[in-house]
Length: 88
Image (tube, rainbow, N blue to C red; front, side, top):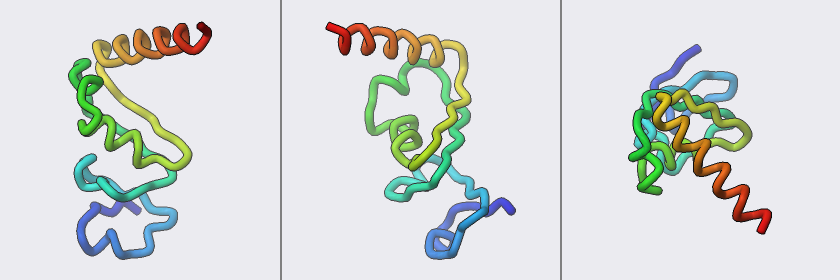
């Protein structure tokens, strides 16, 4: 049961359904689990209002990101740098 997010489905009961759309479509809404795809390059890390940030902040319980190698490497680098700062 896949449903495209639009003005009608926003108001509908969407339990146990897969809802899809762009990150912009979900701005202001939340879902239990978010699957985010199509992100390329580390430019998504530089702007907190970007689609990556919106996608990440829509998830209540789980977030799965499908990204290219460049973005994956940049995320790992940032994560390890942030862990080092927390230890100090």
